[in-house]
Image (tube, rainbow, N blue to C red; front, side):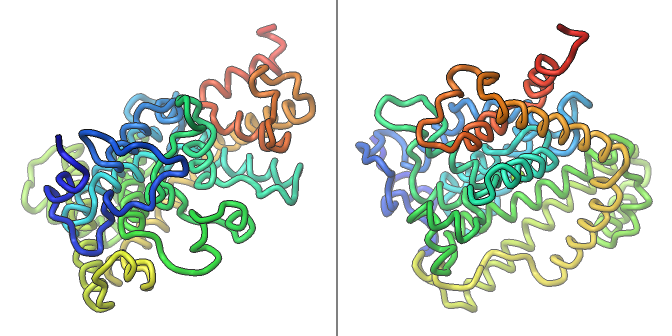
Length: 386
Ligand code: MG
């Protein structure tokens, strides 16, 4: 039988990495797992939960029904986990923990991507100005702490403190006061583990690169627009020079592959330098230091230029805006219908058990997949399908 420390010895962790054997534990105490570490147990619980499976039918940028090759929240989360693990290995951080955080980071995302989240946040503000609003990080934590109902002995997944801390990327002071220990850093200052910090940036590496890929595939982004951005242009020219006869699709794939590799290498190098400069030797040092995970200044600037282009050309493309406007309307109308008359909700969602009535509606709507939301909207509003 292998213990948590055996697993971690196999990883040859840095002195400042998280160790399951030193975990701050779970809200409800449980016997230690037998053949895996506590962070592996977290990951396994996440993979088996219903909210994880629903990610398959939730929008990343392109609505789920717009095409089979576009990223969904599920494939996005898998890409984040892959990138985060590569970085973790380079920095000798805890790969099991980083995988748990990555796979759970979007569990609370609404249907229809950011348009859905913004619509739901506006609905909550309008109904309940003091209720804490709606924020997808916080919702991811609600999913794993409370909303999943799979275990006899506790609500939620009863994950370790370190996985929960990593899920909660940001949070208002007001919400932090309600959340206790896991949000203490938003009141008292301090940083989360490096595993949490790195997952955040792995998320950024993943979505910037896959949005370029999906943007080009959809025809909403043009190659020459991207070529004008030095970071993309530089890698593109290198690929074309090395493989002059390569088919355009493979040129794009090879360019993106090189960008991901370059970003990972830069992040590892720049983070190592900051760890050394700050004299960080332990997890407590990580928590007390300024943020340590970062790209180098020039790469950060290049990435920002790429993000500006994606915002202007892709996220604000009329075709994307048309889709997201429609999606936001669907969510708003669903929320208002349920909030005005809770009898429209399925029975099990009518009991609010300590939640405000609005929070119960937000939990239900946020949990929907794109197509479930569209179906429910049709059932409530369509006269043709009556
Ligand atoms: Mg994400």
